[in-house]
Every structure is written in C-alpha cells, then in structure tokens.
Image 1 (cartoon, rainbow, N blue to C red):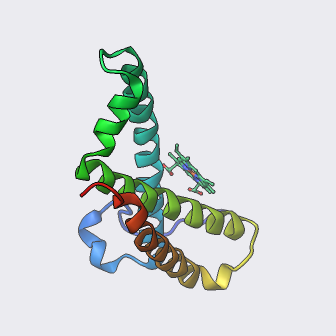
Image 2: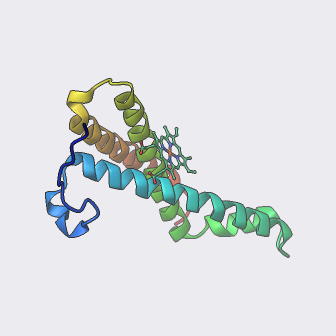
Image 3: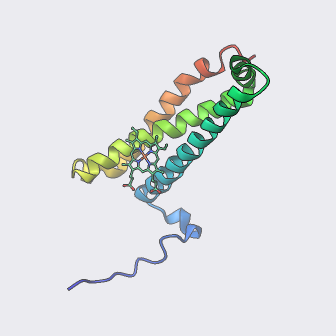
Amino acid sequence: MSQSYNRGLIEDFGRWREFSAGMWAWIFHKFTGWVLVGYLFTHIAVLSTALSGAAPYTETIQALESLLVVRILEVGLLAVAVFHILNGLRLLLVDLGIGLEAQDKSFYASLVLTGAIVVASVPTFVAGVF
Ligand code: HEM
C-alpha cells in the first residue's frame, strides 16, 4: 500500500528562507539548464544573422567582443555552464547511489569550485576590452 505525506506546496517560493541545500541545488540546476538552452538558440540566431549581414562575419564578432557588456555576459555564461556541469555530474553520482550522505557538502563544493573557476577566468574574458 502506498502512503502519502503532506509536504506542503513545493513551488511555494515564499518559503525560500526554509529551503534546504537540495532545494537550492534543484532550483539552480533548472535555472542553469534553461539558461543554457536559451543561450544555444541566441547563439545560433546571432551567428546565422552575422553571416548574412552587410558587415563581414569577423567584423561582427569583433564588434560584439569589443563591448564590455558582452564580456560580462560571457563570464555569466561560463558560471552557468560550469555550475550546471559540476552539479550535473554530482546528480549523476547521486543517481548511482554514490555520496548520498554528503549531498549538501557536494552541492557547496560545486558552488565553491564554480566560483573559483569563474573568478580565475575573469582576466582572460576581459582582456583587451578596456
Ligand atoms: C557536461 C554537461 C552536462 C551535464 C553533466 C548535465 C547534467 C544534467 C542532469 C544530470 C540533468 C537532470 C537533473 C535532474 O535529475 O533533474 C540535467 C538537466 C537539464 N540539463 Fe543538463 N547537463 C549538461 C549540459 C547541458 C547543456 C549543454 C544544456 C543546454 C544546452 C543542458 C540543459 C539541461 C536542461 C534544460 C535540463 C532540465 C532542467 C529541468 O529539470 O527542468 N544541460 N542536466
């Protein structure tokens, strides 16, 4: 016989102060996954219109890369991608039953590692824009 539990409304984001590490990991994973999908479509749209525009492709890319806002968005994209990959690998291990008792610690480790990689990448991303 199955048993049901009243866990309250999961999607009640007004309760965000009570969220556990696992809930934040779930939200961040969904958010980053869908940002990556959004980026993929934007990327294809920008590159395909850059090919058909009046300015040659390389000039369009160079014009985009000369903008500070584009460099900042690139750092944001790296943050989103690195977190999604690290947390995704963590989820795959959890699905295999590995590290079940340290799920919160491995989530914090994904966050710290993402932060370190993103901070280390900043000089490369902003090089030549100023
Ligand atoms: C090495 C790279 C990646 C890994 C290891 C990875 C891992 C995962 C895993 C394990 C899930 C399922 C999470 C769950 O159990 O609910 C997931 C969900 C998802 N991933 Fe990835 N992923 C990667 C790259 C990407 C990329 C490149 C994109 C987009 C272009 C993407 C988009 C998504 C989306 C949209 C979801 C569903 C989010 C939802 O629950 O609504 N992922 N990913």
